[in-house]
Image 1 (cartoon, helix red, strand yellow):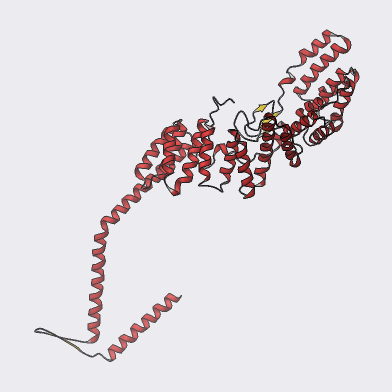
Image 2: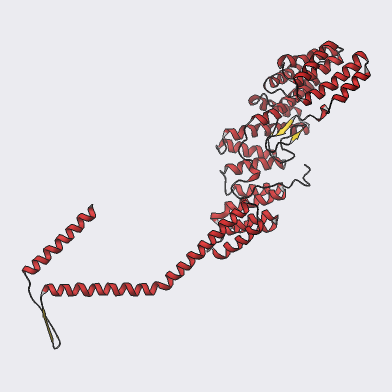
Length: 461
């Protein structure tokens, strides 16, 4: 609106000037050497304006002609750049689809056509990792360390290469170097904790975790279970070093926030029992059992039982059944103790209930105990053999722990999964099935390229 108003004012002013000139035509005389030029003021103004217009037009045409080579160069660069970006996009798609040959070919094409081939180095590195050429990929990522804007990608890539080799010590070293560039990166904090625990540097893992909590780098959901696993690993390490007092204090610190964490509960109960504090051991197991009934707690409960006689041991084991009447593992443990105490009817009743209500694994263990019951109560060897033949699996093969990250099953709890190297992901099977997946494990390094497949060969796992 203002532009139209201004244009109207300009036109009005032009009309006023034209009318005034027509009312006051005047004359202009120009004497130049032997020439005498006479004209009106209006005609002179029109002539001057026309000459100025011609001059501007000629100047623009000349300028366009002079800039034509530059424009052609820009057009050629734009076409080349489009071709390079297209090759780069195609290469990333090839990496995502697992085609290393196409990815490397398109990476070379993008590197040859892009003015700044920094992303081509990344694409080449990812293609080389996909092909298993980790040494060549490492050199590509090292090129990215020299630039401020790509240093983060370079560090992540070098960590990725080391993890792809299964070289956890080098990956840990690379991650510590990257911390100087990315001190407040959540994914790096998680990775440092996991790798430090992986290489046995629990003190550094704990310091990194404490720093992440203090500076609010990690959300509480990411710190709580890692802290629990890390402190439990500390307690195990302290016990292995012969400092049982310190190990007990660390385990009890875990139980203050996670009283149902079975590995810490069993460790604390065993240490209390070793120090003749039966009541303390009893309270630890009973509280953990009420929150997380697990076969490992049953074994610990049996080990701390007062060994007066078999009948008292059976009554001791029955307390777990009374606390969790529907737990099949507790029923079988009590049935075994009842057979030891020659409480035949109690054992038979419990075992028949376990066979009726239990899973195939529970039933197989119950069949074996029924065979033992027939053999020890009645001396009926043929009936015992029939029960043994009916049992289709060994109860010793039952797994008590499952990795939440890779679903690998194991008999003992480990702070680091022996199969995938995930830290703090080993849980009771029911818990692992019930809980939703946590955030993506750092070993996959989301955002760089293809997930890392750790090489566990020769790592003692």
